[in-house]
Length: 353
Image (cartoon, rainbow, N blue to C red; front, side, top):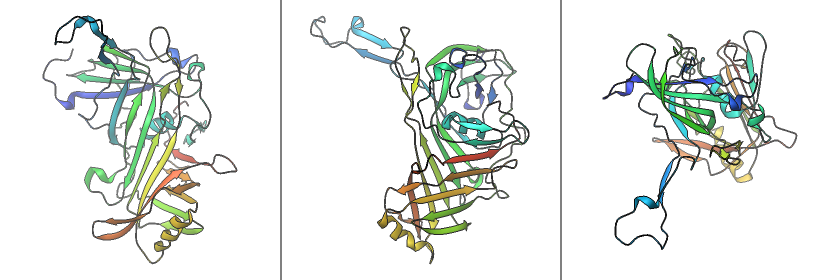
């Protein structure tokens, strides 16, 4: 059992995919499950239960200045509970987060288990085994394999932020992720008995975008192409599924989710004799086609993000310190010929998706 006066370094966060063999909506993980620890920054996760304590302010209440106990209501299901997180990207943990956000993919049946992940473009009926759900555990550990905490059930990623900063220093040099898991129930006062695994956080993890793994950008904007753009500075993808409850059951839990996904990104590049034409592209409202990659996405450790259709949402003129730059703020949309946005990633891990 955990004791008082804990420090952040004793916090663990683990995830496990809920089985899709029968009905994953009805099969969240128990406290004995072998959760896979995540490389999230300690002390960053503050679970939100969604509960709300409010007062009925009706005219027939008793006289007096103080609020009255009989006029309180605690709504445990006022909002969907969530677990926020922030951490580094490793080859071992990235696929689970991409799948938990995008909710649609094809995984090769044999090694190296190449994955093609695309944004969901139709309503998903999670209660009938469609989509992908996780149980997310947060625990405090003194020693050994037992700890105390909570389990977020039927969870998916409400938001996902992926940051690749070529000019960052130290730990921020490698790719970063942040966001929040959202579920329909929070099991509190859990005592974990299963041995958590390091499946997604190896003893010597493979980081993305370290000094030996630099990403390249191909960019076409309003018909002008910049191929193999190696001198770029920062890429930030912001995904938001805008998860809400479809409706609530008698017990108060959401019986399904409604998603309204949106994807935006920012790309910062230097001002050069070639890139200055971006000013015209912004004025013309031309299409923005982005491909950012450290490979084709078909070999171990390769990530390839392809967003062929999008538009600038504001003027790109910017300054990066004292240097002239462009920051492209782009809303990803759908080509008239169909949904072509995808993320390719290969990790030699059989995710069983």
